[in-house]
Each structure stands twice: as C-alpha cells, then as structure tokens.
Length: 417
Image 1 (tube, rainbow, N blue to C red):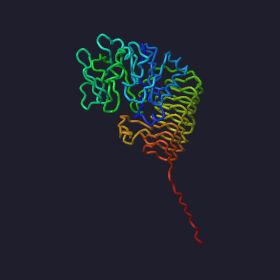
Image 2 (image 1 turned 45 degrees about the vertical axis):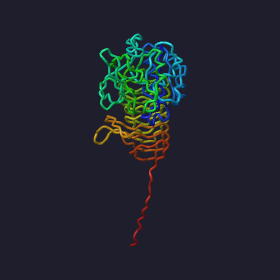
Image 3 (image 1 turned 90 degrees about the horizontal axis):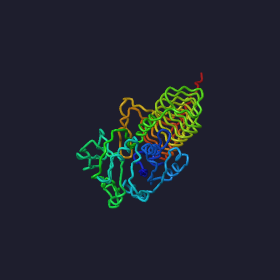
C-alpha cells in the first residue's frame, strides 16, 4: 500500500516563516514536520509514499531526496507536482499515475500511527470506496464538521460552520479506492476558488479516533508539535558533552557540542550546533549549525538552522527562523503585565493565542543590533535589520529599523569672579 501526502500548502497563517519555505518544512524537534509525518506513516506499516508538492517544491525535493534522510526513514519516496490549481482534490489527482490499488491519503498534520491503521482496518471497498478518520473536538466550528448516521456513514459535511451539527471533525486521514479519481475529475471550483475533496466524501465510512491530532495553523502551534514529538523520544547523547549539568533529557546529534551549560527540561540539539555557557530551560529544539553562547538563556523555544546568539541574549517562548543573528543583550519579552493571554496581530486580524507566555516570531535572516527588546507576541519578517530599539509592533519583511536620536550638547560657562 502507498500513502499520498498533501505537501503543497502555502501556510498563509504561518507567515513570516512560510514566506521562505513550504508549510511542511517548518521545524520542530530539529527537523521538518514532514519528516515526522513520514515516520508516522512508516510506523503505521506503509513503506512507500507519494509526496504532492507545489509551493517552493525544490526545498522539499532536495531535502527528502538526500540518501541519508531516505535511509533514516526507510521508505521509498516519489514526488509529484500539484500544478497551479488549489485544493485537496487537485492534490490527490496529481498522484493518480502513481496509484493502482487501495491507498491512504493524508494531510501533513501530526497524528498517531493508530489513526492510519484505523482507516485501513475499517475500509471495506464493498461498502464504500472511501473511509475517513474523525475526531471529537471542543471547538468544531474551526474545522470541517461531519455528521454520521447509525451505521457510521457520512451523511453531512460542513466547512467551519457557525452552528456545528456535531462535535466530529475531519482530520484528513483517508483510505481510498482508485475509483475515487473519476469522481475527483468532475469537481468544480468552490466559492473559495479551490477544488475541494469534500464533495466526494458523502457516503464514506467514518472512523472515530481519540488519539493525538495537531493541525498546525499558526506559528505558535509549533510549540505543541515540539512538545509532542520530543515526548515520544528518549535522550540520546551522540555528540560531545563537557562540564555540563543535565536535569532532564537531551538529544545531542553527532557533531553537536554542549559545553559548560545547564539543561533543565528537554532539548533537541542538531548536528553542527555548539552550545557553550548557556542556560536551557523547558522544551527547546535547535536546527543544524546553531551557535549559542556568552551566558545566553533560552526557554521553551524553537530555533531553525544557523541561528547565532552569543552574548547575553534571552530567547523565551519564541520561534526563530533560519540564519537569525542576535546582537549582545537582545531580549524577547514573553509575559504581559496583566498576565492575560497574548494576542497576535496577523494579516487577517488579531488572534488570541490562548497562551500566557509567548515571545517573538522571527523570520529568516534577521539581524539584531545590541540591546534590542522585543515585546510579547510580535512578528518580525524576514531579512530585517533591527537597531537598538524596543519593538512594540510587527515589522514587515525587508525593513531596516533604527532609533532616531538627537544629541544635545550643553556647556556651562564658568562665571568670572
């Protein structure tokens, strides 16, 4: 059996991180989310996957074509281009030439292998050509809401309704027969201009799943992904540890160094990293070749590849894009004075994160000067230069920010006696 994975999404609500990478290449636990989705598919017993790509597809193909990555995963991977059209129906159709028997299809969300196993087990082509995985949620109006009859057949599907008719939602894990492709070809664009697979799901068999599921919709959802993924791992110390205290667990990849540091909680440190004279607290992950030192403190944060913070920096509850450089004394504030939930201004308006602590969301290749202070929940776009200022609003990509100052000189003349 093969798995078809939808990896073409742009992730508009995940900007600025998705301005420079596909959604599935966002990092948690030191690697792209898609890496862990493939491991989940493998753990469900499937050894072949067709990855449907579109936006910035070269990054996905380059990373997962690496023989070392394929060896780690133990899977045969193929790539197909979705083309210009949007929607899950077009994504699935792109894989038609690679499919000749019953197959699984899924979005690049985090689930347990048991979700995939459940749809395979429940699938009966004599009863329905499609089986879909559902779960119960507290706020169904945020998702595609499903109605089932007494025989667990899908009789209704409504996308983000104001008044949901059930608490069951679609988590985009399916088992299909190849006959589904003929139906997909007849679908017309929805009001959103997308080709939606939902038109073909009425009559599907519904399987109710109660395990873990995370739809990564906003940048701060990566914290939950990071915590979940690391909770599934044991500490592994393949790198070099020198004169450091570890109260918790650490995954240290080969070639990484942890020197004169204190670790409390769980930190994932990728190859090429050098962590020296640093205090790590909570749940952290570091991409490749990060250099952190000079009594820097990092708490509950995700750093992508090639981040430098070498002098008296504090990074708390923050997500840091690739190639960011922190000047001495840079501070990310992560708590409001009133200790209320932190709101973030997105392109589509203000969003309540429901998090008491949230630092900064910083895009790729941002350079900070000395003593920069960033207020809670602020977003800084990619390729910015930030001088010595207090950042109390979002900064658009490719912006240079400096404090305007005037130097006033006073001279007191000595009075002649």
